Image 1 (cartoon, rainbow, N blue to C red):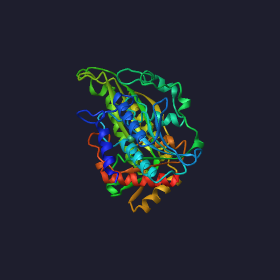
Image 2: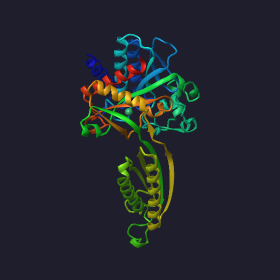
Image 3: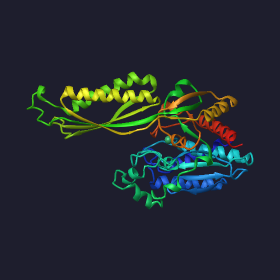
Image 4: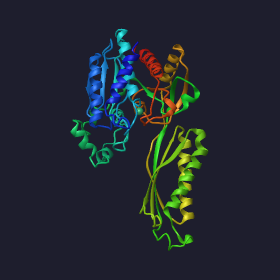
Length: 407
Ligand SMILES: [Zn+2]
């Protein structure tokens, strides 16, 4: 049984970038590169040929019988959020290699199989997510990316150059649709749906799209004792009312799987004895139903304007980005479902609230995502945990799906 191998690999990876709180492998950091170097060695020892493209994607390949047959790909990421856990991304890489090793033992299949470690999947360092899979799918935003900086002011182009990568050669990173047969990603759920439903596998139908809206409210500063209550234009009071409105609108729309959150708010001047003159707040909105997303955005915009009028403050609304939900491929999804039925594994068709590299790969090839449960839905935290038995079930289903695609 390869369970011991899988646990050892996840254990070794969890030591790379480990601090007192959790695992920190920010995109292109030394820890991130060390983890990738470690996996490249394991992939080569396992008989894969490995190449690295100019954005830093690592591509391990197991040849098939027909050299020209379209490629079946699995993959995920090894970069993490600051103080993250041991399973987000890593399960898809270690599990992907475990699945490929099993297929290798069966003898050559018709199609080549690739394991891809996507570069910079998490947005924590540069505020940009999934640089590797976006580049591969020809969806790179070179102009925006070239201006991105991390919290210490280092620009993305400088970071890339220091690691031997570049934004200048992204054309060589993008792949050709015709060469790829399918993409399947194994990932922890990062939510509570599977745990509540007591199912072993989640099969993703739609990946939610993120929208980010920035609202800037301008009021008037003043002395907190001298300005009478009825004469104030308090930007933070408007902001607080907007936060509550966002919550109540999203609660009403949640039947369609839409969620909205204000997670960041900056108050100016941010001093105890001054009435707040300006607040910037960010609304993170996600959903799987495009019509419902559009309706919710409009309701939020209307509410923001009404609140600003009532409070006599001025608002500016900036749509920072708004992406569309991505459907997973019905053929690949059915294939995963058949694998679950054949292996007698309980499963649930569901949507993914979080974004994954598969949503970019879906623009290149029929794509699917296999979820395994994680304890109490906790993720992006040192407390993230997935049961070894659940990881192995995920690998079983991934192996069978890859086999059916590549045989
Ligand atoms: Zn992830």
